[in-house]
Amino acid sequence: MTKRAIGVIISGFFTLFIAFSIRYSYGLILPYMLPSLTISKTEAGIIFSSYFLTSTLLAPLFGMLVDRFDSRLILTIFVGILGIGSYLMSFSSSVIQACIFFGMVGVGHSACWAPVVTVVMRWVSQKRRGMIISIVDLGSTTGIAVWSIIIPFIIQGFSWRTVWTILGIVALIVAGMNFFFVRSHPPEHSFASNPKNAQKIKIPIKEAYKKIFRDSKFYLIGFSYLLISFSILIPFTFLAIYATQELMIPYASAASLLVFVAITGAIGKLTLGYISDMVGRIKIMMLCGLLIASGTIGMAFAHKLSILFIFSIIFGVGYGTIWPVYAASARDLFHKDYSGSIIGLWTLYHGLGSIISPSLSGWIIDNTGNYVWAFLLAMSSALLSFLLLLPINKIDSIRRLN
Image (cartoon, rainbow, N blue to C red; front, side):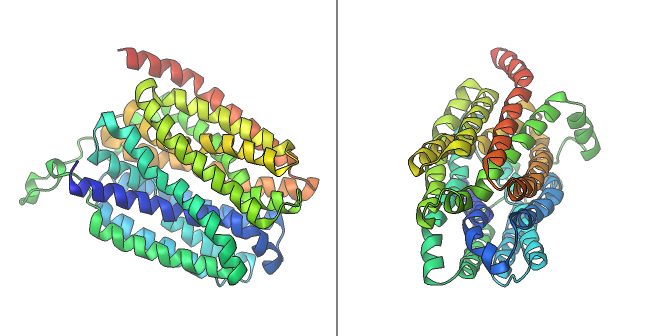
């Protein structure tokens, strides 16, 4: 592996580190934002939904752009926007302001998934793809673990606003790292000294999308992605506040639940990501759906911290593994020249589930007065995601035999 390939992998790791740190820190900061901004859980869900609205609308565009333009500039500019949005969150004084600023964070994050995994896949062989993508995606779970430990200390010493400021500064540093480390293609695919000799994308945009939209696998995996995204976001939005408000668990202990989710998620990425190279992505995606369903139903009925830890660990293994195997399946099951476009389009499904999830679950909590039904909804969504993958599993098994 070349030094440049290692640099691309490192940049991808830290891009996901800060992007997902900012995304999921919202749930950790929420117990302090609620009284400070005097907002309901429904309004808290709407703020989170604004983030997913902007990231969802732009993600397919970046999936297409990364197949055709300079990934280094895309990642540098939009990770910078991610940082600016996070910094501005520290000045929020109303729901509207928070929606605007977190929506800006979503604009930045829209370029932090499809471009990263697409560029990394270009620099690694197919045999190592599942493992390397899992290593890069460790950035997301590492970020959650690190900030779940740090945030309680920052809030105790300063305030929740300081957390957003620090996250924004770190994102700007990562944007600079992308500028210096990332290159779109390895040398054999890069532009030669004469631009006329550059390798072109063989499949025109219209033809690529025509092929994608005629393939039933695209829709089945897309809707499965929507449902699993819906399920995952409920614990990430409300687990900490559920633990502190309903179960009366101290804030530091509630935050540590996400540390365990992140650590077990990292273990899942490395082990199940590696296994997916041998048994197929779809089987591992189905296993993740069952793990997430088991974890969320356990959260619904946990009444002690120890029980909540056990089901958070089960949830974490499924959560951590699901993203890299979904991404790698695009390259395995579809033409390599539009894998970035497929990942971007699947992000539409992911985003739709994520837009609906926090607002709907927040509304359910406000109107029922407890969190049980929200977690049961998460469990049901994960099971439906599993069922949608059954037909794809048969197709993938036949493909692997041939």
